[in-house]
Length: 283
Image (spheres, rainbow, N blue to C red):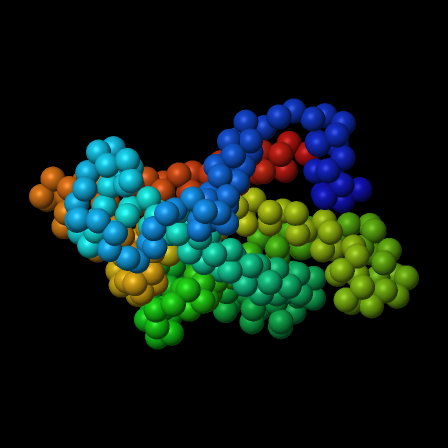
């Protein structure tokens, strides 16, 4: 029985015990997804349009419950549409990184030899480089934009998946069922697909959730520094960057609410990742 069977059958059916971390994390994540998907129906204003006078405080004007920024833009509208951009960037970055890092980790760990040495050296070199600086350089070269930011983040996450998958593959390939498949003459791709991957890939599931959290923070940081999404886009990091001088003048809400959204989104994915880690360790 592979790890995926253990997660689905043993934990979820035979010995089901609600995991508070997963429930709390999923509640936050589902809420953010609904905000992103239903943004046109939840916001009466264009997030990039001037819809009122600048600096309306929160909870004063019912038309603008969270107030407005220095351009007179509705903060609630920008937060909701910002969720769409942040989640899209995180999803693209994690998906691209996993699609590259997981197969390379499987190949390197199973085949070994020169391929393993070259890939390990390359990934360790990338992993040793400070992630935020590497992402800044790549994003600066590619230019601002949603896809470019996602690509710059994906590059720094590929070594994480590679290391996790390779380490688990080194253990799984020594199992008797893998040895039996090789002895029966199963081709390399067949062995990896049917005997190794199902027992290795589930280990990377918590990494996916944790990378989502890191991607949201890093994307906001890149946008704050001016090498992420363009200033015209509704984005939590962009909003904090454009309003960073407001707090000196007593205008706290223009930076507080975007920062709060970053915190909540990160917390949701961290809780989910920790909960999944507990389940895997418990098996």
